Length: 183
Ligand SMILES: C[S@@+](CC[C@H](N)C(=O)[O-])C[C@H]1O[C@@H](n2cnc3c(N)ncnc32)[C@H](O)[C@@H]1O
Image (tube, rainbow, N blue to C red; front, side, top):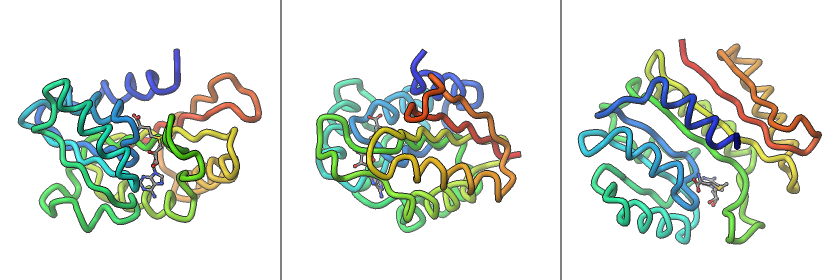
């Protein structure tokens, strides 16, 4: 099973209809759609990406699947989510996806970087409810990917967050899935 599916399976154990969820890197919109289908029209998905192309691909996918009404899309860096999220959901966010790297079929030079990934994770964790989950998929095959994955691991260890790690194919450059639960 692919790591994206494993991440979704993990989220399925906690995410419910009407809940609030965040997609920190919406890209082609697959994670946003997954979250939007579960939370339904009475829930909310807040989706972020720094590229206009990603925002429009996500918007289109959500519209095609009748899930646009529960989605709030922001062309912004995920380290800035506090500026966009409604204050009343602070401490009530149920699930967060963060699929790192670059936009598939997009510009591979525009990629997530630990300089913003780490502050973004810290803020996102703060906004999560107790019992909430955050999944982070870190790709290690591209420039800077290994270092970013290492920084993510360091942060989780330092903060002593509850972690379940899936090492995929266990090769030095294969992607990693971090599944974080807030106690
Ligand atoms: C692997 S893709 C995400 C895939 C997506 N979740 C999906 O389901 O299709 C990574 C995305 O992260 C975005 N990204 C890079 N740096 C970012 C940042 N600082 N804040 C938000 N998004 C960023 C890229 O533009 C790219 O679209």
